[in-house]
Amino acid sequence: MTLDYSTLGPTSGSRLVIAGGSGGIGRELVRACKALQHEVVVLDLEASIADNAREEGVEYIAFDGASSASITDATQQLTAGGKHLDGFVFLSGFPLMPRRPLSEVAVEQWDELMAVNLRSAYLLSAGLLPLLKRADAPAIVTVASSLGYQVMPGMGAYATSKGGLVSLTKALAMENAPKVRANVVAPGAVETNFLAGGTGRDASASDRSWFDQMSDKYVASIPLGRVAEPSDIVGPILFLLGPNSSYMTGQVLHLNGGRFTP
Figure 1 (spheres, one colour):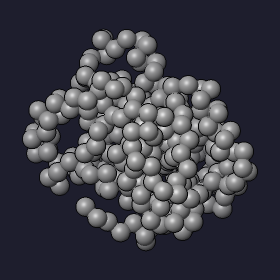
Figure 2 (tube, one colour):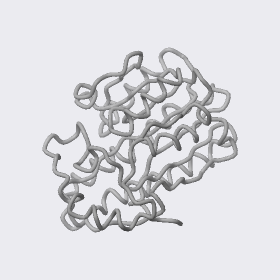
Figure 3 (cartoon, rainbow, N blue to C red):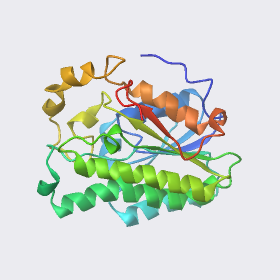
């Protein structure tokens, strides 16, 4: 699907940081931002950056969301130039594959997932807020999940992390208003490598049969009749980053084709 992102997004030339910009949604977002002539910095795992084609004119900084030291190093690189930051998008995250009940999630797995999916959002936001506050109308957008609201058996740890991300974003919105806005998009299933466990973190996570086996039933439950494409998520992210959403903060946009309507 080809969409025109030019009308509702950030002002042309905005400086944006995208954590997780080498994933399926992230790459589409980076391409859209470059087409709109924004200055883009991507934060992602070194393996994810290496395995995916880099976009020309985009700065890439390798970091590991499970490591506080790595996050500190990345934010220090961003703040060293003294530039302002117009927007921060948090797309980092991974599920545990194959799916498993909470009783089978080892504490080490739980801690790593929470570190990447939730703690890194907190640390990156805290580290980047001084740069955001230098901009005229800065915005944060985090990418949560419908699973934070409709928990699927076997995805409890991931759902917990995304529910926490929603609450974190609302706290950022309340504590940094009116200067910095913060909002959430919560997609349902999106046609990316995430359905097989994501990219870069676990080389063995490449089996999406769990979703393919239920896809007909899942799609039948979606009023719009299809699984989302990355472009379905990019438009709302750009909208939340831009001036046309200037009266929105602490909100969640549910992007699931009508499957869940809170």
